[in-house]
Length: 370
Image: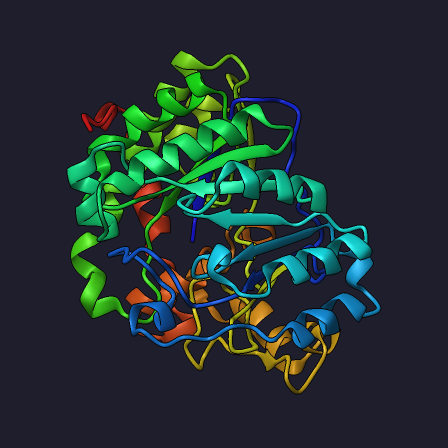
């Protein structure tokens, strides 16, 4: 899922390396969740199927000869705090002297849990919050609005603890107006960074298409978000995998004013996603058969990373004629393969439609009134 990360603190920098070198492992510990988010791309959670990743597969990953060389391990779900073996898994990471990052909706992230995570050596947590409006919380997340108060209280404790705390929001048609309010709110309460994810559904496109922003809307929204960030925060460091920004007038506007760190989508290039049933996809959003490159029940993580299937996915950009001759080809990796797969007519070998929207964007059309 393409994203733009607004740094409020200059003390942390994402590490992105050479394509073909595994740098990030996303692990879906479970498909269980205590929310019912309209935009969820975890097909098992959406369909009510319950999977818990066997601890033995996590042990297998951590025993891999290359595990110690992978700097970023991100534990997610579903909701990882519903995973029945979480403490055992965190102890395994502690034994390997690896500090994972945990992505949670924050409802169960009580002060006791935060303190426990610190003792296990958890490096950071990302709390997912899409709105501060309780009515919209019910609309977006499908649960009791009082849970939002609980999440914000837990977030406040985490920020005051030694744990590095960041916040992420998924941008949909339902919460477009909220994002500009969320950014200064999180800046003022002291989170380390704020990430906005551009909503792209997984396999369930038909049920989610009404929540997706039009591609032509996205550049103006991004420009508006950068304007807001520039006006409130002097850190002025942005990390993003929306590489298409480089093809727009927006890049010239902001490149000299900000440390604008742009990289291509990591899927299959330097990251993989382990699903809660043990299957492995290059993409955190996708578990469609076209994306599955291996199964931890049958192979180890290095074997999957170096498999014919993963290499074929990694090189799929070479089969997209619209990208031939582009000056950014070697760093863009042909954009988001999930976007291309869902909205193109050639499956994985489709052109990412978001690219053209940035090429056509004119500064005269900004700033968007969210």
